[in-house]
Amino acid sequence: MKIAIGVCEKINGICTTMGCFKALNNRDKNFSMYKNEDLELVSFFTCEACSNDSDENLMNIAKKLEQAGVQKLHLGVCIVKCEAERTREIKSIFEKHHIEVVEGTH
Image 1 (cartoon, rainbow, N blue to C red):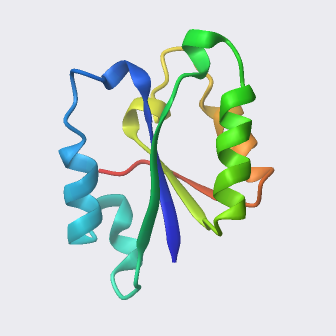
Image 2: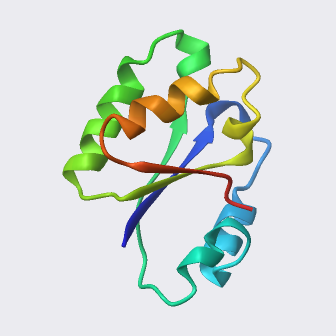
């Protein structure tokens, strides 16, 4: 299964993203649903919808992920707890491109 992970741009320089990768590699936390599946992490991207006040870049990413066959997108807790309260809007963009959105990585 092809998956992607999205995190908030505001974690740059603060978060190592090791928690996301550890959970993915160990198939635990929000990746436990894949215990017996082969996974391919196709994309790890940052969301900047709140800083540029535009969804255009996310729509472009969603389109590319859909074209690449990504089936699920995991949103890091940094997006799930979005300071700009845009989580629902962010999820909607990807769901419109037939990508199931999972809230959380670890």
